[in-house]
Amino acid sequence: MSTLDDRAARAGILSEYRDLFGVWRETSAETKAALLAALGLSETDPPEPERALPRWHICEPGDAPELTAPPWSIAYEDGTEGEGQGPLPPLPLGRHRLAAGGAVCWLLVAPARLPLPARSWGLMVPLAGLRPATVGGIGGYGDLARMAEGAARQGASFLGINPIHAGFPADPGAFSPYTPSHRRRFASVYLDTDGAPGGDLIDFGAETPARMAALEVRFAAEGDDPAFAAWRAEQGAGLDRFATYQALSERFGAYWDTWPVAYQTPDDPKVAQAAREMADRVDFHAWLQFQAETALGAARDRAAGAGMALGLYLDLAVGTHPHGAETWEDRDTFAFGASLGAPPDAFAPQGQNWQLAPFNPVKLIDTGFEALAATLRQQLRFAGALRIDHILGFERAYLVPDGLPGAYVQMPRDAMLAVARIEAARAGAVIVGEDLGVIPDGLQQALQDSGILGCRLACFEHREDPPVFKRPENYDESVIASFTTHDLPTWKGWREGREISVRRDIGLTPPEHAQGMFDWRGREVSGFDWLSGQFRGDAPPESAEAMWSVLAATRSRLVSVQVEDVLGLSAQPNLPGTVTEYPNWRQRLPAGPDEIAASEGLTSAARIMGDAGRTGT
Image (cartoon, rainbow, N blue to C red; front, top):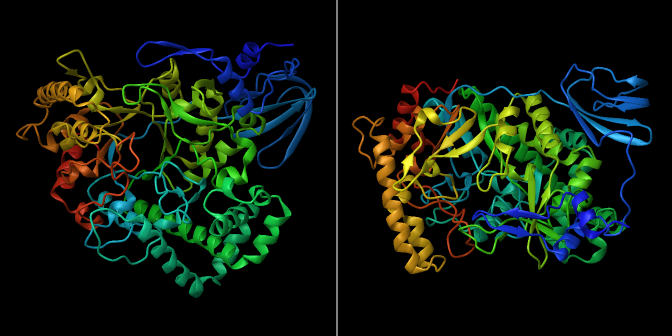
């Protein structure tokens, strides 16, 4: 019988890892046992017998896989089949199922490398905040389209937003875009309705029910649209399951783990009975998805029509809520009893538990990476560029069992990258992998080899003390460069040390540590000002123009400009480590799409980017 350590090792559970501080942390026996259970593996199962084929194999389109098998059969992705024996035939792009000798191998036929995008720039905006207080309501897909057209007129090649996955209308307080209910469905809360002037913060508790009520009025008038009926018929059972979940959430609450047991499984007869009883509500939620995809498609088309080379730059959340629509519909693909998280670091000395359901690598491989492929494909229907949040999870996922310390689980990196290349090649899209944090050895090289862009934040690109910032010509080419992100201070806030003050004031940073952090920030600002002095011309060092001049000069193929910097704002959209202590994701911008497009700040950014040879076409 194999030991616990042997079983854990075969499952890819790392026995130890080095944290951000260089400390080796050992995985306990309790954590190993809990993670095996989360992956659906027993501590005592015998080792898998020797296989006639590998679990998966990667090759390029038009090539024959370097595999020789006894009599084999291939189920191609398009539904056709083939059979033979000995060498395999050349294969088309896609994921194909090879069966031989009682074993199954997934043939992942992907281009070796995606082409890099042209040297250009784009604008990042918080979609919900695109309606200022004078307009009110929640920013929507129509606002997104107007913003894309306005940014395109200024020469931007893309417009980026946070995830727009389906959320929880039954729980208006669950508005974080990175804790979705379903990543293959879209948020109905971004469907446009009239708002009323309000405060500087979005009140989702009031705005979400108001928007849904207005949409119900529209549905009563438009729900019999033949175009909706035809679209729904094409969508099949998957859409019906999602719409049924949304209807059940109105009856039992947003999260399926609190529902009566019979309704926690979509195949239970009581679920089918409830769907018949609530047919009007199921119809409504299906119609909302039709409207969301229609509106998102219109935004995509308007961006392209305005001349944007990449168009919408969407964002794929790293995980999904453990008790939302995605896990209710597809229980087997996820690891239960453990959450995605992060090991201890300077921001969270005890580590982080993100309360997100991770993909189960065992089931992911068994199903030919279907859930990953389908999720990417759905986003890429509307995106010319797609950011994969925390792509470190393609290499290894930090899983935190309930009540125990976390540990890393090895993921099938090369296969997952191949799936990403397959879907991006089909869509003609760019993939960006958010590769920030503790980077596993070899991951960034693997991303480069795949033509997947990494992320570089200029605020962190320095060494020594006092800081010496990386020169633009030393940036990698295959990355997207920005100064910070939504999780970090804005340009103005960074110079002020605003996030240090906020963390101190709400008790996250001890006051005795804050002064040292302010002193360090002062040295960082001086170091960046010295660098920008070689590029900014007559622009003052504290101006956003000084920072954009450095970014524009980098070798990086893409540069991202934050709308908060365009508008000269101090407050960052999200402060990691907080829930109610900071107004995460609720801050309105002081201007709407048309005003932002015509603003002096965006005009200046566009001029600097254009002077550096960055164009939107």
